[in-house]
Every structure is written in C-alpha cells, then in structure tokens.
Amino acid sequence: MATISPAIISFATAGRWWQSGRDNKFSMPPFLGKAHWQIVLFSIVMYLVVYGLGNAGITAYGAQILNWLGHQGNVIATVGTGFLSAIVASVVNNMPSTLIGALAIDSAQGPVATRNLMIYANVIGNNLGPKPTPIGSLATLLWLHILAEKDCKISWGQYMKIGLLITPSVLLVTLLALVFLLPSV
Image 1 (tube, rainbow, N blue to C red):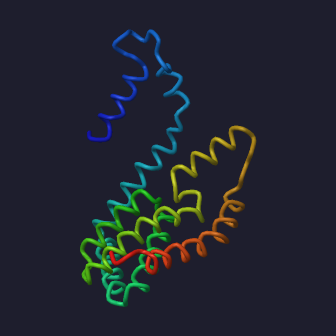
Image 2: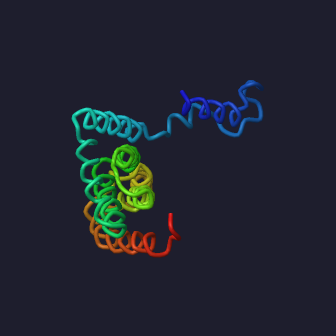
Image 3: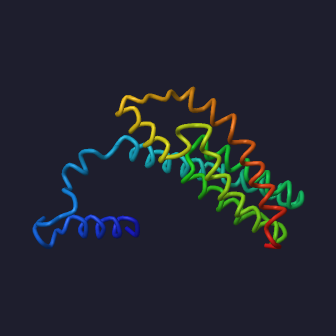
C-alpha cells in the first residue's frame, strides 16, 4: 500500500481527476495501454521466486557466506560482498537481490566497520552487477524493449558480451576505491 498510494496521487495530480480531466497533463488510458506489462509481471514473479528461495533457506546460506567474508578483513569482505551481490543481481534481478543482501548482512556477524563496508558493497554490487545480463535490471529490460520497438535490435548475446567484458573490472575498481578511499566507516 505504501508504494501504491504515491503512484495514485501522482496519476491523480497529472491527470487532474478532480477537474474531470480538463487541462490534464496526460490521458490515463493511452498511458496504461503503452505500459510494458510483461516486464511488470516479470518483476512480480522474480519477487515471488526470491521470497520462495528465502523460505527455502537460501538467505541463510548467503548469510553464512557473508559471515565468513566478514571475518576475512575489510578488502576481502568488501570485494566478496560486492561480487556476490553482483552475481545474484545479474541472475535474479537487482531489486530483490538488494533485499536478499541486506537481510543476509543483517544476520552476519563481524566488526561494525566491516559490516558497514559490506552494506555499501551490497548497494554497489546490486547497481553495477546487473549489467552482464538483461534480466538483471528492469530498466535494462525496458530499454531493450523500447529500442526493439524502434527497430534497433540488440540481442541478449551482444548485450552480455559487452556487459561481461566491462562490468567486472569496473566493479572491482569501485569496490577497492570504497575500501581505500572511504574514511573509516
């Protein structure tokens, strides 16, 4: 409900429903007709899959891995958490992956400074990590869908070739910068 309320308020404000649609900024029926509902459905299904995996104990397993990483020092904990988050995000989508990582880090143990670095690494990994696969980010799915509608087709293979080439090095440099440039967290 917390997510739906702001959306309804935004639609009502833009559509000027209280004025019976006069001087509205956009018309709701064409807007809803152009929405990419298959991507919205994909997102909902991914949340259900991740929730089911969490109930099956995958989140607890992730917490064990992060717990081990947290005791290996700041560099290993940060880089390991970032890459683990990136891998999960590229497979199950970055939005549910961020939640999985946060829950796993919350149950992991270790020094406070290391856990704080792991929290930042989770966010970085979930934002850069989805780039190797199109399903890793809803924005990427929408972008590829819109490009295809405009006859600019990018295959998943082409996309993944570039993503796998660039993402790991950018992620590594970013995570190392987090460890060495961030003042004591």
